[in-house]
Amino acid sequence: MRKPALAFILIGLVVLSACDTARIGAPKGWSAGAVQDDVLYIGTMEGEVLAVNKLTGDTQWRRELPTEQDADRAIYGRPAVGDGVIIVGGYDGRLYAYDDTGDPLWQEPLTGRIVGGPTVHQGIVLVGTGEVSSSNGSGGALHAITIETNDSAWSYRTAGPIWSTPVVADGVAYVGSLDHKVHAVNVEDGKRKWTYPTGGAIVSSIALHEGLVIFGGFDSALYALDAESGSLVWEFRGSTRWYWSTPLVHQGVVYAPSLDGTLYALDAANGTLKWRYETEGQLVGAPAVVNDLIAVPIADGGDSKIALLELNGSEQAACKIGADVRTSLEVSDDLIYFGATDHTIRALRVKPSGNPDEEWVFVTNADDPHPPDRARAC
Image (tube, rainbow, N blue to C red; front, side, top):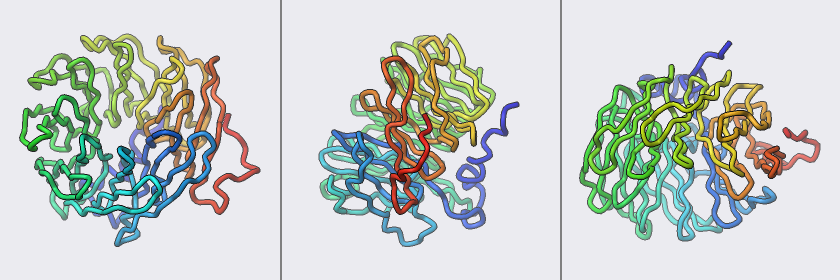
């Protein structure tokens, strides 16, 4: 029997849009990672920015976010990396910028919380904000901050919080909002290009593919819009629950992870279902391609795993993690990087045969982050 969907999300984050944060305790972030050169940058569950060698897991540097309140110290979105600058969105509503040695460059307070990740584009950083407590209002904004000076370039207001990470193509930023709309915004001046209304909140980030804007919503629908006009090209309504994370598009196929525990493979041109891969857990993080396999993070308590699928949907292999995997996967060459809810950051190496090996584990709340007696997951 499928486990109750969304239990951890409703407790940990989603209900914050209708409840007071203080009543359910401090948030615990689940940041995805970003690799540049030989370094993995990722947020920890302790609210730190961690930089480790991508091959060994050895610490390059780690910095605790200097939040004013300990209860606000959390990172949910993937760090943005570019031109020697690492930018992190804090749950406290501040953008934090570090150089590649970990020295702080600046911090910029914004309105509301930051749940999604920032995006760097041509000297500016784009990030969405919004309150998650009903006592503080429900509006949101997409902000553009100049990286060199950390001055505001513009701010685009939305009727609901923005929890998704903006993506940019051809001078346009695309972002979803809890106001049930996807917004297309001109990066140069912050003016609206178009909006598209859906039947539910949108926290999924956008996948762009050959002129299509592809995303899922809390109305259990997956949409493909024309990137230029915002008009609907196709929609898929086969899921029984919400879409939380970004769809993956690979070789003309959309791989859409749903919180109903199913990965849906659709023809990117018309939305026709090709196959589905069903699990007993929830698919919260985005899948990734490694060695021509689809790596899928499955959050299922003690049965959580990273599954490796053939392009036809058959499971080739899996690595049992034993703790929820809520983060999207980061891939560099044949290595997969992710965090788990047992306070670990992990790297799996996928062999040419398709079998995974745990390359290294970094335990973020241990005195020794590489315990020598720790059993390998796979």
